[in-house]
Amino acid sequence: MNDVAQCILSYLGAGMAKLSFVAEFGKAEEFVVNQKGIIKGCSLVHAETITGFFSSRLSCSIQESIYKDCVIVWLNKAQNKYIEVSFTSQYSIQELKWNISQKSQILPEKQKLVFNMKVLQNKQKVEECGIYEGCELYLQIESRTLNIDMPNETVRLIGQNNEKISDICERACMKAQIESDGLFIHNGGFQLDENKLLSEYGDDQLDSLTIQAPTMFVELQTPEVKIKILINEEDSVFQLKDQIYKLIGVVPGCQIIKHKDENGDIVDLQNEMTLEENMVSRGDILTLNYITVDLRVIFNEVAYVLTGVDSSLTLNQLKKMILLKADSSDYGNNLELIEGLAAPNSWHYFGNDDQDHLYSLNIRDQMCLSLIDKSLDLTFKLQVRTPSQNLIVLSVNRQMES
Picture 1: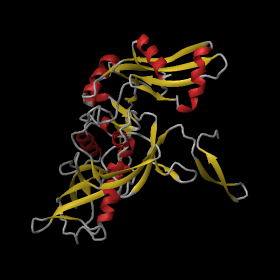
Picture 2 (picture 1 turned 180 degrees about the vertical axis):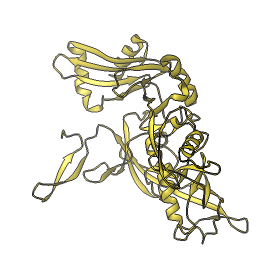
Picture 3 (picture 1 turned 30 degrees about the vertical axis):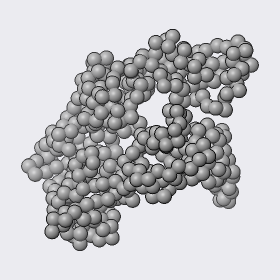
Picture 4 (picture 1 turned 90 degrees about the vertical axis):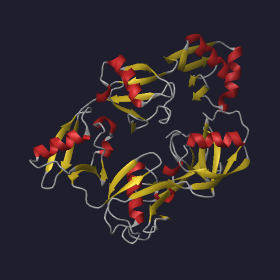
């Protein structure tokens, strides 16, 4: 069926299409195809039905298609108006916004761009964000109401996407009639970057705003960025790790925090000790590294051992690593990783997005994973509490209709 879909795609001159086939004696088969192959909806369980297509009458409905090297950008919440925007994998998000501007007449600085429920940063590369041909992005240009706790009151402002954080801080201080010198905007203890636009922050990054002078803080250097974190000297290192998890999504168990001690030696901070006991002082620079793990992965009933896997890898990168080790030509589009074995009641979901980093999924050393076909109808136990408060356990398949 992939060959048939590719022929249709070539005929359309499209980069991606959503197709629906109906055979004379079969039900409709819907799937999405791009230049690499079928990426959604057509699985191995349909092989027999597909074989029958060539000996019976067949109709094909092209429900959607977009040009090559383009993404879909939805322009409103109702999702009834979109544009197709060209891009390359080496574009920055800022460059992508310029292309959107040419099609929509919306200035780049007023664009808040969302992909996979995450707000995109202007300096990020399209490739780093996991954006590929045919992806759906969401443009949000509405103003936002900001409630900011000040030293003596709470100020409410209407923020525009094209405002810098420093401008919002100055406006809030002016409204509260206090001097803005030495004051910064924080959200949940994390100091917002003064030079970033409001359009680069999601609503969850603006839901606990305060303006205050920094007291005890440290600067955390991650492999990607440097951030400033407000803390107390009495906080334990584990509390600091929990704050880091809330800010950038790295689970505490995947964090290694290093610090230069009084002798100039680089040492690991100890979880059970306070920052003061670890000799961390105000303004110190801490370095965040990610753990490496050894994994056992089952693919096509063969166990593969992967050693020294960096937890900063994405699920997609890990899948490619497994397929390479297995010498498989599969692209991995129809494969997913689960924790445990592909056997009844012996597995758990492991991430829901190929761009999720392992460090956000609580990856652990010596963990057992399985790489399986997405269509595999696995069995699991479901606990249901009845209206009479009795707890019953059902054995169900994940593809059962609710």
